[in-house]
Length: 177
Image (cartoon, rainbow, N blue to C red):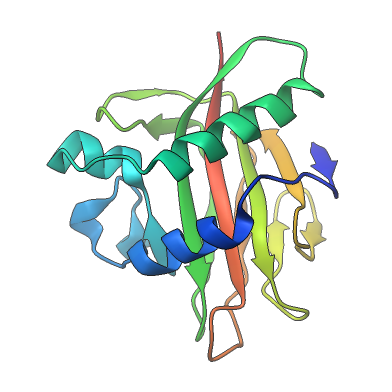
């Protein structure tokens, strides 16, 4: 598991605004199993592009480039980020334990995922923890924190206790080339 507490991207305020304007709970607009895992709201532009031919915002693609570039400073093997989505949580929203061993990438193809990662764009002091039940590990998210782990490790998000969005995370699936 790789945990980086200082992993910044450009234009975080604009990215937060983009996510807040576009996040939804419509299971027809995502490959995530939002009805199965009790998700918050999701924004998954690559899926929406493949399904509905919606244009990917330039801000989103430059953010992905920033994330990829930052990861390359720590991971020497060649890799691709095959999917990237944002989640917001409030009012009891959370995620039940799951893994990303096999992911549905935006072109609706199932493939073996090597790593899963999450970047915390926004966190409030008492926002919901990420937990790894089989590892006996719980982590309190922090702004600009990046966590990467093997895709077969089960993880979840405790339900939010806030009445407003207290956590915005950007998650991704990564495959080795």
